[in-house]
Image (spheres, one colour):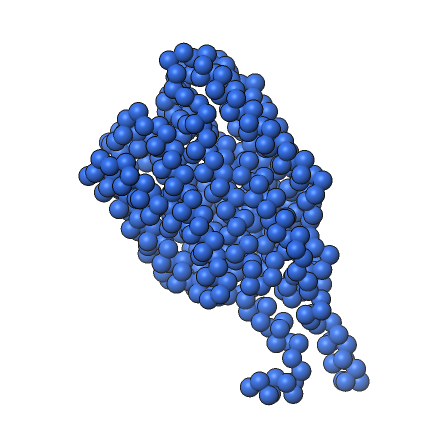
Length: 457
């Protein structure tokens, strides 16, 4: 009787034959990167060319900043309900709704390239922002569903790479496409062309998502995913219960807050970067955009590198804390060089330094959060991370933007440095329990017969 029970239990255990890695996983990831790029590239579409936007629409800096702040204003109240919805409608429908929303918002802006239609362009930006609610939390879930144990951190990093690549496009293209003409009508023509380019790209990506994006592979890639699928409804809880479990653990709450501080500082700096740079280098809008591009490109390379290191070493705490402190050091270096030098090329080097750590931190923090919260819903965890990041982005943009206008840009930059040092120090006591890695190793260990396990010992 006992032997029969043991045999039945052994048959229910996941084994390597229950898992498979599909080549298609890379296409699914690339498609997500593409449609995330189309969305996030519009985040800084206006704030990177503030002087042009102010002249054309007849507005001030507050309204320019509002075009990026609306992304956060939409995400904060909608994020958790959207996460609950996403857990019910599958990854495919999440991608379809997000990409369609981006395309619709982009086309609304095509019709707003007239001086009296600022609120129409803001409406289009708001639709894009709502679509982003359905997109930002996807990398953790997509990497867990499609990729193997030794790829999941790298895949998550590449997924976040899509958001960062969009920021690169948002930094680079608007200054190139929209010039600061004396004639308002010429600015309108430039804006119209830019909006058309973005709308067409978003539409193409939406069609690809609708016809080719797949929710999940037929066979899971890891034993931990086999277990989640097998237990299914037994593990599925309401997102309210999930939130209670997560926030009752103080080390997780501290992780969410401290990583939100770092990510918020990066996003706030990205929003204000052009205004800060133009204060010290007047009239050099294209350099402001290129410096932003440099910052994010180095951040993207760092994200993939850090993700690879995490996959190989599993040194989550050391890597996260190291990057956090180096973010503060990099921001302090950037501030000193901005104030005490007048060389644009030195600022490019400083931007590369900032991007490597401040931007590179984002992907690492998301993967660490997924590791520490397994087997909770990756979408809910990702949503909490994004909410914290955008909450601090909102605060950083408003606070340091106000300090810049009222007391000077040096004091705003010092505020970024101090905030990063405080956040890094507060991350030191956090307890790092590697739940996802442990679960995978336990499932692998179950496959070993007792006599084999004795030989291994």
